[in-house]
Length: 137
Figure (cartoon, rainbow, N blue to C red):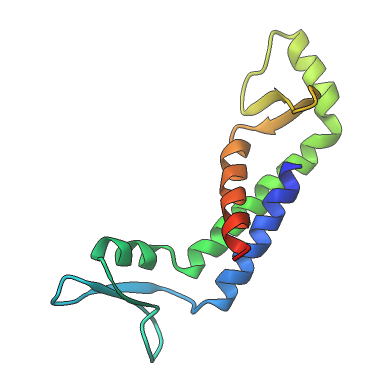
């Protein structure tokens, strides 16, 4: 189920973000064109010398952003949980009134059963799947 994937990804992302050096992370360009990413702490940089575009992206994606994304994944999972008990009734009502309108999406799963999702669910599921895949390494 999508809600399970969303929660699994949120857990992985939250664990990784909390174990990383907390941000903000900042890009610092070097004289040779490479860049370093620094956290607000004493010691070594968060990343070694890298291409400036990579370094600025790494700095942008510090753990605070990861925690916000994890919150979004959990919110989407809660929405799916709230919709689940009403899926069949809502699907029948929406179909009888000419089809879906608004922010809900009426679909059929792999077995042909009706499912009701939000407009954002497919995007968040792709994010969750990428996090789960990368989180296994």
